[in-house]
Length: 224
Image (cartoon, rainbow, N blue to C red):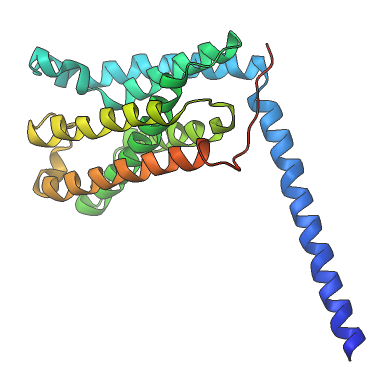
């Protein structure tokens, strides 16, 4: 009986090792792709297009926005713009830490925010235009790319502190001065959305800290 139990434990241990080895091989292949310069160029072009399209999408709201608030209204395209600078830095063999901190915090925050808002529209109205599904997919990808490239970031705590101030300051602009993106179907829930968005900012900052500033984090470098 003891030998049988020992055999079962050994089999479970070996399966555990095989699982870990499989995950490690998958991560090695994934990050080999992410660090590939051709892939970086492709991702740069995608994010440039996303940035331009995002500012175009905000154009009707920007026309009616007081000039003093213009830099704070187009949230998602500005997050993509931060990541464009990050990718340009990678392609030049450099790290721009402040851009990296701003990118991961805002990509995660606004990527998740847009997914949740479009899901809420679907729940509240019972329908969602095809562009809503497109926005959900593209914004989820924003959040994912921000986290996936975390092993290549080199920002410090003070960079993250600045990114945190920017993210939280934007809450004040959006929900105190009513500059948030136009989702007319959700106007009745604006207070709840503002409260949710504040905590989403906190979670995004915490994710950035965990992915980049913890001592045992994965650390990788993109070759020139």
